[in-house]
Amino acid sequence: MVQELDDRLLVELRRLADALERIAGPPPVVTDWKSSDCFVWLPASLHLQPVPKPNRVALSLIRGVDHVRDILHENTLRFAEGFPANNVLLWGARGMGKSSLVKAVHEDVRSSTGSSLKLVEVHREDIASLPALLDILKASAFRVIVFCDDLSFDHDDTAYKSLKAALDGGIEGRPENVLFYATSNRRHLLPRHMMENEQSTAINPSEAVEEKVSLSDRFGLWLGFHKCSQEDYLAMIDGYVSHFALPIGADALHHEALEWATTRGGRSGRVAWQYIQDLAGRLRVQLEHR
Image 1 (tube, one colour):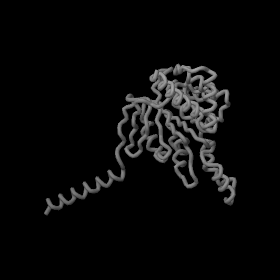
Image 2 (cartoon, rainbow, N blue to C red):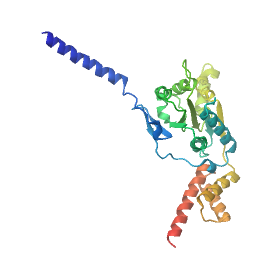
Image 3 (cartoon, one colour):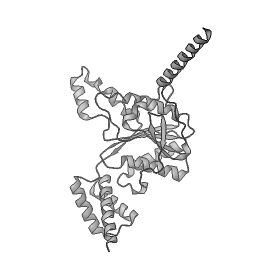
Image 4 (cartoon, rainbow, N blue to C red):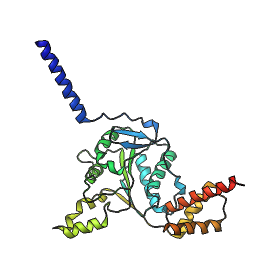
């Protein structure tokens, strides 16, 4: 009888232990920080996935954004060297190199100073898991930039509350070894029509979107990116051609590049890069058929 009771108790304890493990979720995977300088956050497994070959361009190839480039570089350099620095929101025109600049500045600062600065990308849909990520990062001996590309929020999206808590840090404060960089096409991270709709239907219009709009105030630096001029666009083209040593005359190059921009409906860093990809492909085919 006693043995039977003990066996039942053991089975019940095991069942409760399994249930608690399911509720708690998987334990965080130990991160091998030396495996890479860039990682992607995987919240389902509480894991930081190393990125062996990050997709980025050299800082010298990013043209037409010199002012914001210098501000972001200085802020990142201070952070890497252990000095106070600000969270940064890079906002503005599409295709002007916002995310490329973040990755390029990280690599330039890391390589020029010999620091062990890490870059962790968080996907937009995983913003709600930021508290769990910060718990892992604050235990690290490394300084980390948490990066979210193309950040924005819809009308019924509450994930911004997790971002607010991450930026403010709550009662514990944001970990001193963590900084947050985000890119967005929207200065206030939510669409203008949504702000206007909420203001027009609210009892107190001035408070209708205050909570969401105040999210952008948590970023100490706002860096604006605007549509590039023809001069800046051609400077981007010339920089790429020089860097990759593409054999084409300046007049033909500029004529083709401007025609390419016209067919794409505008000029931007992304359009310049797409033209260079097309040009390099055509030139390579010509060389192979000679």
